[in-house]
Length: 260
Image 1: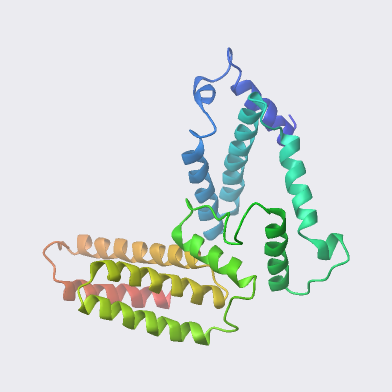
Image 2: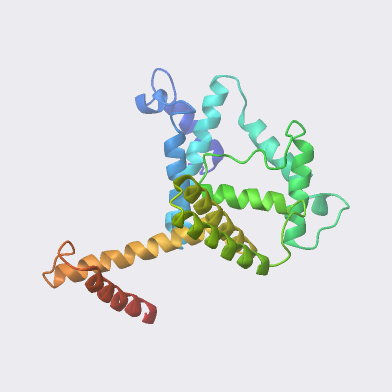
């Protein structure tokens, strides 16, 4: 058997056959597949983060299956074909890399990104702003970073990270003032501004804010599980323990992890 996109397409067509196909596959629509599509994407991300290469090969296959299913469903309704999909991305890559396929120049990754956004804006002439086109269903951290990156492509950006630190102090003080005034609406707004500034700092330092937070989530989860394990091994209860006692164990766990 050949293992390529054509073979996968043939299998999907067989699964989607109205008479002899799989009942589950036949029941799916472009919209019904979205939750699974997103789940498979995040499983790919997790495999990448954990550097599990064999797992990534499997997860990429699952993701590719969803791409194939979406194309097949679209073909059934005569919306588009796989050729349209490949044509669109190939033409886009050529258009947006004039420093490779034309006589323009771009010496740094930053210049390439800026040119990409400008070319994209020219292509999407119906858009009134360079900030349009960012999917709002994404993580708010990703939306914030993409918004800042697009704005930066126009030159609306600080040259280095020093002003961002100043802005961070300003937003922190504004949040403290809102808390002191017990203004719940303003507190929420200032928390948002503070988070937006932290994303900006992450971006200026060359890091992806969403990835950084996911790593912190994982670190906290691992340490808390070890905290639970410690209490279980010593016949103790978290529910009856004081915060000071838990903090003491937490510091021990943190020290051991840092030494590993």
